[in-house]
Image (tube, rainbow, N blue to C red; front, side):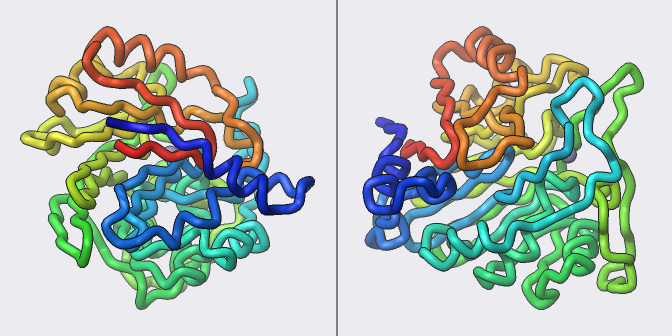
Length: 317
Ligand SMILES: [Zn+2]
């Protein structure tokens, strides 16, 4: 059984003033009030931003609501000198209304479209943040509350009240004829708060890449923040929902090899496929990778359901 809910959109639109794009597209105000024992839902916050919740506990992955213009999906590509900005009013509107909550925030890597908003969201929610040494240093230099930062290296299998988080070593997507990683590098020295505050998007280096398998209730959700993976890390994993990035052109048998390793998950939900220069309040616009991904999944695992969510929609697996 599954359902894709658009009630978030409609519910919020019904109760909030017209003309506010953010609110019109916000999740239902009733979401956080859901009783304990509610079904587990998986909500897409755009790009690789995900929320997994049972109404009581909430895990976020790479939440990035601000989505400033970078040129990433233009022929010229992103301007590396694009200033970083955080739309605190936008984030406040979600947090203050109870529609954005977090017990944990899981960071897959350091790039601007994954990490930029996490320090402020952590500050507002009190969530614990998992990431590599570089991710934590970047977030600390952006003002994240350091006592909330928790180091992960991949291999951790952590049991918290209401959910489990398995951290997997992973890889970033690689592009171009040399299979290179955008803005590579590290900011080593945990707690080195003297790293200069990142100012532009190229200051937010990759810093290693992690993947996460979150188990909440009877539902296992596996997320990759980049179109790549380490196959040996996935041995024995059988997620119900795979959040699969578009891309992976240079990765050998990117989709079939992954789906085979995971035992052909029941649900494959595309992630990181929308043009994030456009705001979260607008419908997701395919940056070009969605249909190739759909074809690859259908060919490799015809029994899997390929479920495309729009911004802020939920899947109830
Ligand atoms: Zn990246």
